[in-house]
Image (tube, rainbow, N blue to C red):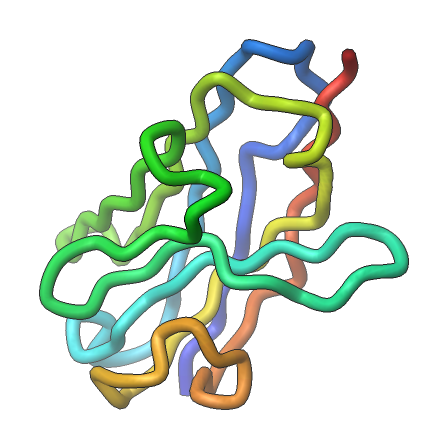
Length: 121
């Protein structure tokens, strides 16, 4: 069992930056492949970033967002730069045991409650 708690969301102007954190509790955090997803009002939850070998990003965030993890702290991060209004959403971190399916919500075993990111124009 893994519990995930996101933090770091907030209101930021377009062009600004935020760093999201996802703290994991439970055993064997380093065994899990971690990912970030987001969900805007009225839209499906969509993939943002994950690890599978190296880092993988959605085309919409490539070059602006960076995923990283600190296994000693049981934490995964999402550094978001050059934010745009279309990045506004609730951001969720998730954990999966399988190395594949990094963009598929059904492949993830555990989810956090999410943190709101709002980017004003």
